[in-house]
Length: 188
Picture 1 (cartoon, one colour):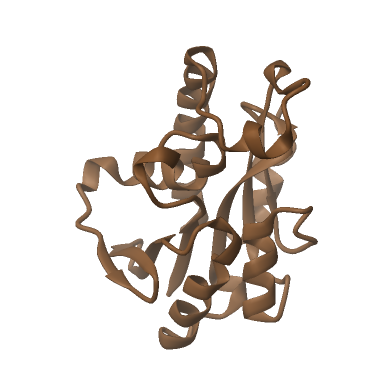
Picture 2: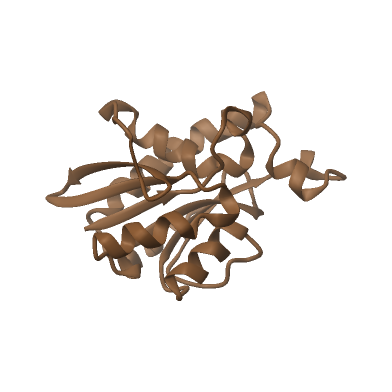
């Protein structure tokens, strides 16, 4: 069983903001399945079977800084090991249109990842970090930037990236995570 977590903030005012790219990616990946999201453990979740394996897709509804309050009970209840968790989050240190897969590491100052690490008591879970930085970021305070909505030009870049991310997620169910990183982290 796998748990795929898209990070974001609940509420209309946060829809289509840079910080909600985890929600956006999950919604795009699952759009053809027309998921019916259920609520449990402070999160919206959808369960599917992919490549013969049960997969839980989760959008924590705790606000970003408390994401671990939703991830931990799902992992505990369904007995999902950290190595079978993939967290999709925004990454202010990468340019929009880029992404990086990692098996562990620091939160990099990302409060959602920090909360998950605190609740799981480990940093040994998989991440898919989506770049959100653009030239527009200059002179904008970090909080205002990440909570700002994607511009029309940025939406075009994000939409192009989402097609590639769909391939990454499809491959996630067929390859080891090391193979997945090998395939995608070294692309230009």
